[in-house]
Length: 116
Image 1 (tube, rainbow, N blue to C red):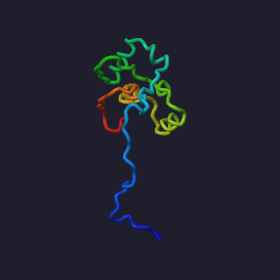
Image 2: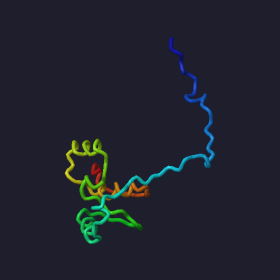
Image 3: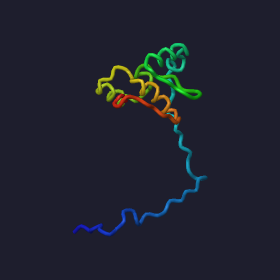
Image 4: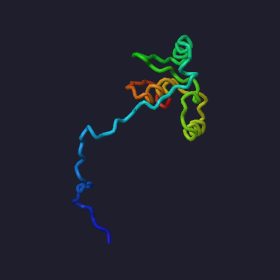
């Protein structure tokens, strides 16, 4: 029959990890490569877009926002799901937040609930 786990601690027989930092592989958090369209967007256009979307940013070296989903270079299966959700263009938080988050940077984003 089946053995009861009552009184047992899940994982009690696991060995303790050895956290020797010199043997851990570095983890790269920067997954974002802006398309030439995004990277080369004139600063005046970026400012106008942020203003029109009510995007406020603080900090240095903030990546340009994406204005269209095609500009973020998501895999086809992700783009297909975005299309199924009926979004025509990125919301403000998606537009600016995705490039920041995918760059491995810290971010505090405030947006309307359900906006992405």
